[in-house]
Image (cartoon, rainbow, N blue to C red; front, side, top):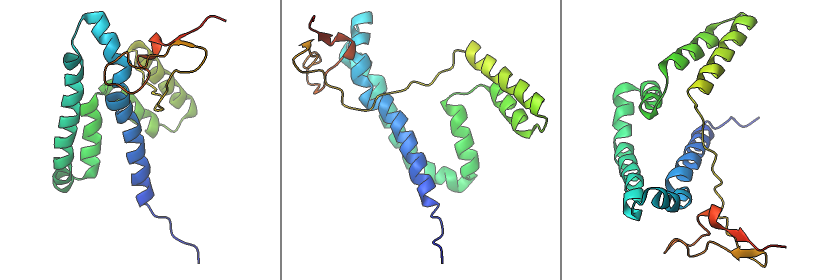
Amino acid sequence: MRARYFYGWNVVGATFLMALFSFGLGFYGLSVYVAMLQRLHGWSASAVSAPVTVYYVAGALLTATVSSLYARFGPRFVVAGGAYVYGSYPDIDALFKDQAAELDRKKREALLHKIQQLMHEKAMHIPIWELAFINGHGPRVQESGLGLIPGHAYSAPYEDVTLKAK
């Protein structure tokens, strides 16, 4: 007899993807942009870090209440509502629904091109984060970036890592 598929792995996979992107911006990404924002705007480290702190505190508070929202409204409503809270475009969302319901291949293609056009016009993008601990050190490195941000254990900001001339 073949073992049944355990659907809990879907939850594990979705949680992994959410953590991948949220940690990339809120935790690991901070070292990339904190020094640049300080340099560009003359802000203090606490002024740059405060929004990240608010992000984590708000996330903790929302995590504590999400189970009661699920019980009251149901997961479909809560998850769909989360996309709108995060930020979305109703016109593009409507086109997605239209495209999903359309059976004619040419009309589906036209709707897809319209979605792509709107996304391009609105300059929508998703940042891709390297979640590795990239450290610049070795014989070819002139300035590694280690210690440029006091108390930070990694080479950062990465754009300040320089190599020796050959």
